[in-house]
Image 1 (cartoon, rainbow, N blue to C red):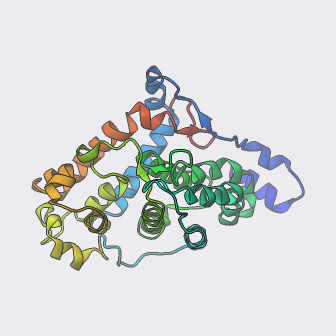
Image 2: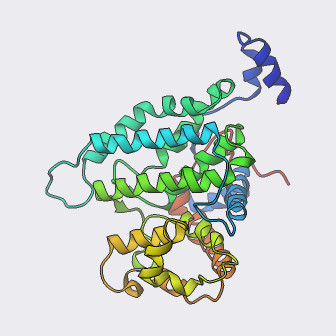
Image 3: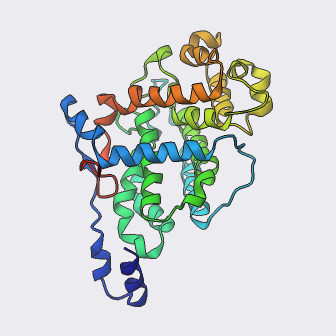
Length: 322
């Protein structure tokens, strides 16, 4: 691979080196429940879980406000997310009888559909431009569904897949780990919350009070890892609103709790029962391990979520290398 990079650098007009990597437009491969075995054995599953766990390890014990490198690619991704945010400002909700699922979301989404490839091209190094159509599919899948005007953990997984693909083509590097979670993913969460609030999006496939959260899962995994070995803050503290307000700038987990508190009324134990139960777990490392198990079981091993996942050359349905 390195050789083809050198070749293309020395002869930009020569198209042959790029042919070494054939990018393909990702498509759905899991159409029936029995296909789930194919997904769990796939290279995509191994790469995706590896990516989630590498970042989980990378943020362990670190605050959002800690020092870390911010690369040019990270800056470009923040610009991309800033563009999506700006489009929300330019696309106000419309008057309609239904309180939920504001149809202006579809107008916002159609902008992304038209611009996604150009947005991704602006993030990629020039020699990887051919990957833009493949990677752009994951960006489009990561912001909710325009037919149902809903958003859930499958959309969140598409954004993690989008970031994973950027790592696989070398646009993001191992040194970007902290910035991927603390800058890029955190900014993505802010934009998604704004979408959810502005267009009153429905939770996709919500399990009501029995799900962890209506919309997200990964902030709780990576957020609990941030707390591992914290000298004073224990899981029981996150249901204390004073602690949340004091520390949410440092911890993704607490920022997610703060958003729930803003959006929901009534006792926390009633509207967020699973999170309430987690507050009784004695240590953050146990919380973190439990959430990873729960994520696999409740998201990655659930057909209604994975039937929408798309596979291409970067996240392949082919069986994982042993």
